[in-house]
Image 1 (tube, rainbow, N blue to C red):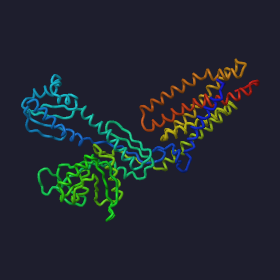
Image 2: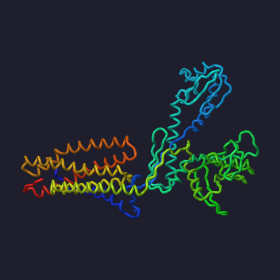
Image 3: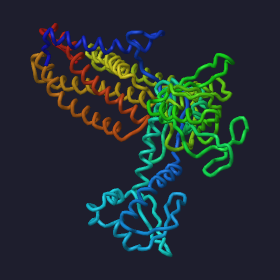
Image 4: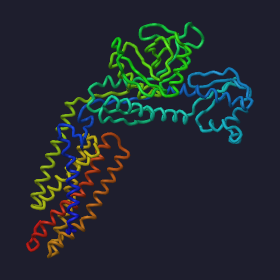
Length: 514
């Protein structure tokens, strides 16, 4: 255990130097163009905003149930079932049917699955039905169907929230799912939380619809931002799904901030055809049910590029472009909880954490030096190396350090010393029976290895479980603890052991006390 080849020594110290070098990057004032890595501070250390958002899937369920109208009617016609008084009420379909028993067989029976391909869709437990009085049938989403819609909306919302926040330029945001309907957003160092709340609070459903000349069938009465009442056709010419890009711009003639957009091939075709057929008419640009602009169509627009104007400030134009680029949220998001952590509180947390670490570190160094003399000094050097490697690995991973993460580092200091104490106490026992110091130290390291590994592996398993099932700060604690265990084993059984071997081999003919 005390023998090291030259290549082994080179590899050990090369690994230590490379990893430790990364820890120095945290102290550079200017960004290094080659190695721009550092440990990021979490919300509790840096300050910032905490938002808990909740999706409201009611409007999405209504849209989804409306999409079932045509398939249900087709199912009824294909099976010669006469129906009447077909209605859409909130989140349900209601209709009258002449043969309830036949409908139930068609809707539920497995025998007809191979005969009618439409029935298989409704046997996926997505929909359920209830028999009412006077031969009425009520179709609605089952619990499984609602859960499926909700899960899909939540995942899509998380992705769009991530796009919007990344586009703003917020560094190291934490965006996580919380329960069945909620999204946790942590934004360290955020200086303008109101802007983020406005961006996340907008669904950003964009569509282009023609302004009707009179109050005809199939129109919505909306009020534009200028206060003008307009009759808008319900027919959507094109939606925001056809947008490829959107950027803020300045109209040269009046210096008015606008949003320039680019359409995909299908969108360009739709837009070109609509503007060609309706030259001279007004085109309403509707965002989340509000008219933001209703310009005249002076000429066909076939290039696939367009411009949205609406008395914006440049900030509003920038935010609108961001919303259009990131895509529309499937459901509205409501802020159910909001907290702001000031930078002063975060600074106090850092000072407290560092003070605890320094005091603990000094006490450990004094104890080890007093208890084991020169070998205690080696253990202390290994402890410093351990911390440098731990910070270096966190820097490589660009991890986010939280207050529980600092607790994990402090715990690592104690565990690193524990490994050396186990080894040195085992060596003491071997020195009582062995005349050769080299053999005693060699046996001490060999026999203590199993105990040290068992202790650290069980703790590592606990850290892995915490990381897998924990969240937020718990994960931060688990990461620093897990990495600390690995660096502890490396420094104890490679660095400290090599330094110990140098002293033991040099004093082979002398009595060595520990």
